[in-house]
Image 1 (cartoon, rainbow, N blue to C red):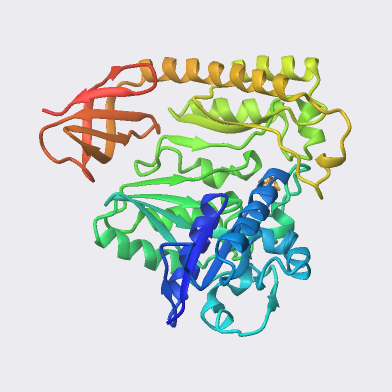
Image 2: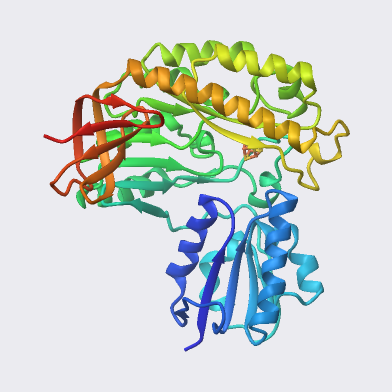
Length: 416
Ligand code: SF4
């Protein structure tokens, strides 16, 4: 039996995709070593020029280290770089996103292949990833209809399409019966769920919440314009995690326009204040150093960040991606300046997070995920980290904390 080694680059979605491919392999064995596997499937990422270089360097390295192995390029990079790598004979085969579930047949090919497929397909397998014994990520959709200037994703993952409500429900029912209580809904543009199915995120949430055993639901990320009235009606439901991640990307309207975003600051602040008034902790994505971010746009941006009720942040330093609109923009921000802005932004949000935790240290519902030597870690309803001391094995347990001690980057409690 031939052996296959999987090398995964990039985001959680790619990791899910690797799981789909692994689950479909019937006539091969999985190899744990790239040095002696017969085939190496590179599930690639192409989000920035740097990501492309890493994939290319890996393939060159493998061709030297294990020249007898057939290298197969899969993932987002197959749609952007697959053709050139195939023509240069750097890879034996290329398989696009839609071909993942056919991997068992495709890998049997004895001659070089280029199976790029299409970008409309959605896998029949709904993938889940477990964190400990009680938290599971569920991928509910694929693709994105937005066209943010800096992003290559829509051209390599296709337009937004959703898994069927019934399929997601079946999966969650199964997991809930097996003791999973918290579910995190993920995808490329999660908040677009349902638009192709005559459904919506709110409708899906309502159905999921009725599954016996479902205790808390989180949503990976939402775009501001995706939070509609139907969604807002759910804000006080007990099963909604009291944390939402709203992808703003910037707070200067000039930058939002350059980024071709669909949000603007005036409506963003209104929305975030409304959500915060329901007791929500709020996170966001923010890109610093995008072309055009001159000193005055940055100053305006950071002052506006200070005014927002944010508690968590994923701060990114802009990284060029050829083939995107941003890549041809001229007003480049120097790396050291972007680094400094990144630091300043992170500090502002860390301070806000500390303040929020001081005000929200009572009545925390914590799902403890992992631990050893009597120290367990998990997250509360606000997505803040809680560390708990206990002599009992608490992994996978829900624990109620009446009063936590707030420390620098986490809350601490003793289990009694
Ligand atoms: S919303 Fe924008 S950044 Fe996110 S995947 Fe779509 S195009 Fe890319």
